[in-house]
Length: 175
Image (cartoon, rainbow, N blue to C red; front, side):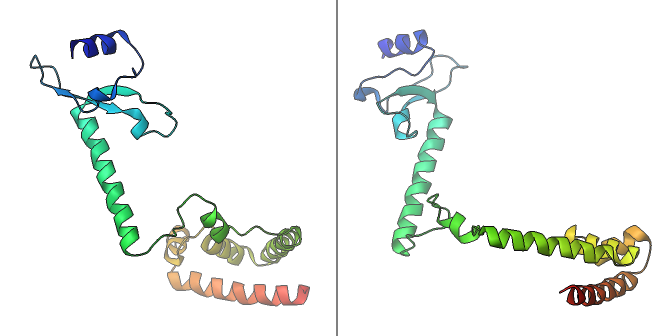
């Protein structure tokens, strides 16, 4: 054990040690010294290709053990519930399910549609355009818009409804 302390004290980086030292712990010799445990970094980090032992505090070692227990419990739950496929597997499944790749035609169509929508909103009266923009683009509630403008919520609601009807007419005429 004395050789282990000397090797760790001289080294600034993790030291490869024989497998016999894997779970060795020692008692503190003074009141300020902390219990230390030796862990194999290869068990926790995939980029370590060979055994690399490091002395860490008992708290850190316990956190690693807790993580292993939770990971094993998760694997057992997936096995029991036959939940072998997950969207967070990092194999591209989630990306394909959520983010559909658009063709160049679809991208162009979306761009033209957005230009038409912005042109139609520009044709609305100023208050209706601002209220529709605040509600649908900025995500503000009708109550928040009314509070910001110092008017009743019903006034904002009616203005948005009228603006949407007018937008519908403008867009139907442009197509």
